[in-house]
Length: 638
Image (cartoon, rainbow, N blue to C red):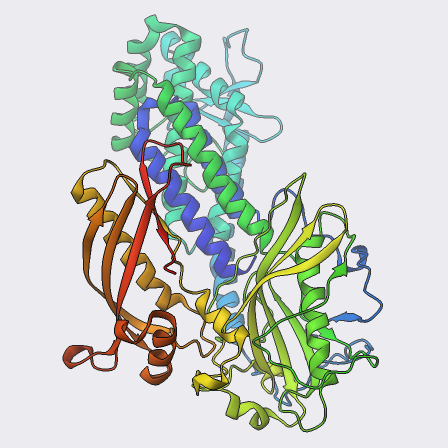
């Protein structure tokens, strides 16, 4: 996990806990509210995944197909050190690193602040413990049931529990001489000991030292300490008995008058004292306890589990360790022509363990595809001198070559059906160095060549969304779906469109979308048609940027007219307009081919540069869904 990711996830978890604390408040037990801060502490102190750490590269035994080998891109070495020997080194840029980077400056600032806060934390605790040990006197009449030493310290602002592994309770003389106050204070501090708050106070100080720059961490420290005191108050009243609730509250008020007290944010000693606002909350909790809600408790547990899973599962995924891999040419492979937008690779076996197959099969599949760029004849624009596979399982995180190229912050997705099949899918990039240089492929692009950065500045990046499937029983991985995402092969003359291009473009026309309604009124049926039209139009915005004539940067939805209806069928006329990024000529040609000449026209006036469509839409009632909603599903016209 990178530093920005860690910062964002820590902020998200803190905000989630603050929202839970504010919304549910006293409807959940005080100890449960206090426990919520454990999520924050874990997210602040654990930099990556919690459950399963990634195995070292040398421990992942990955069998390679006979026709290909892959090599992991070595990590960058510090300046002045020679990299270890390797079969093929990554390309050199010839540039020297600056003397002082922005990252080094930020690290220096962080280290300075951490040293200051950490020093304050250390000095404050050492001074407190020295004073307590110097001035303490054994309590004359300690409660015989107290399992820890009890001392009296002159001029101590209030009772406290101090010491990590051999804690002791320290009382001011006024409390030690008052039997009721002494009983309340001892019970309170023993509850602190039972909750482990002397350890949590230390952990709080460490979090503040490491995250001194983050204001929400300071807010969390204040509130977590306050929730710890509330939890101890509730536990103390439970030990003392309900009859002591009001007297215990009076003791709190008497002890809270002291402003300077041990147990501050950067002290590892606990305290029974409180500030004015905290005191009001604690006394209110003592005198008018709120009824605990089972629903609130259940909701808190569910939301905490959701927040924890989101924060730590994402962190676990981003540390996958898959680096760019070089594709070695296959001398036995011969290719006479290659269209990068048409991806067809033979099936292959993969019998790797369940923990690694998902991403690995995608890398091997794209490596087999990448070999074809080596095998092209001399003079072919895609003839490659070097090819790398970039597994965008987590797109652009730390690989240093993608820069701003590509459109997706890719996610790694896979599903496993125990009885039928396995699936793997993600965004994958081929980094190709054309043998004739970047200028050899420039005529194939509009809007600029997608290039790598740094050591891969001379490489073309071709990004694919790939899904593979492995049917149960035969162990063969097969191409299920792939969608390129770059701006090659503009529409051009319709007579030159290939069947593969037409199929790819047509796949971005999602006729069979389903819409739900709350009831079966005329207004709801009209709304279903309008929702379908808006969803359909948005697909022009998300069409792949590979010369697709339907790729648009703006869409407009006009009238949606319900023409006829039966119990099971709705018939609409839908009018919309889109502005194709490759111009209207190819879009008009494709629209005429797809919808007919009468349905397509060039926009005028405000819609100049747009293509307008008049679509027939038929929606049928979907009776297979078992839900309280009424579903209507679009039907592709004949």
